[in-house]
Amino acid sequence: MATAPLATTALTAQALARYVRVSPQKARLVVDLIRGRRAEEALQILRFTRKRVARDIEKVLRSAIANAERKAEDAGEPVDVDQLYVARCYVNEGPRWKRIRPAPMGRAYRYQRRTSHIFVAVAERERAAQQRAEIAAAEAAQTRGVKGAVKKVRKRMQQQKRKRSAPAKKQNKKK
Image 1 (cartoon, helix red, strand yellow):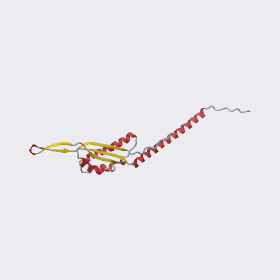
Image 2 (cartoon, rainbow, N blue to C red):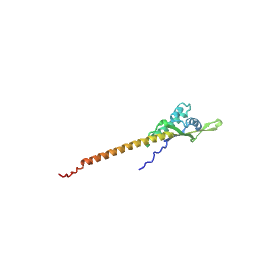
Image 3 (cartoon, rainbow, N blue to C red):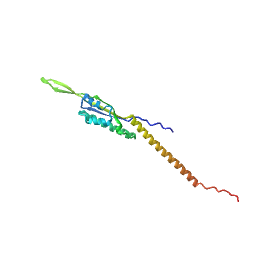
Image 4 (spheres, rainbow, N blue to C red):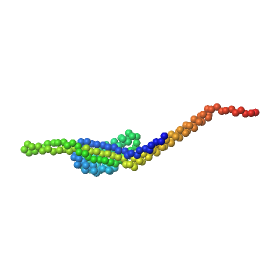
């Protein structure tokens, strides 16, 4: 029975924070800093960025990393968090809260409070995915080799038992 080669698909995971109370324009300034960076490096950048939204984006990034770990664990594959990078990240506009402020002479001024939806996706580098697949294939080959050796030993033992248990034939010797 021939087995197909293991797929070398890179692991991807994502996280989304909805209705974050910040203007999308302000959030995009910070998201642009981490796009395409290694996950560890992106976390350091967010930690030392002096913008209020950096904390919210950091939470989303940590959630995406945790999702990647969980996804790999469920698939039964090891994942190296150091090999993850920010594959995609963007900020969409959420609903606007319409508010009214009192104005002179009994009038009212309308203003809008903007909200954002922050999306972050992390992925494993292609090279790391290939290495992970090669390691898994090597482990499978080793296991297969051990199973084959065990089968051979069992077969020899059964043959030896048969030889011992079979009655020896008496040869008729002429005298």
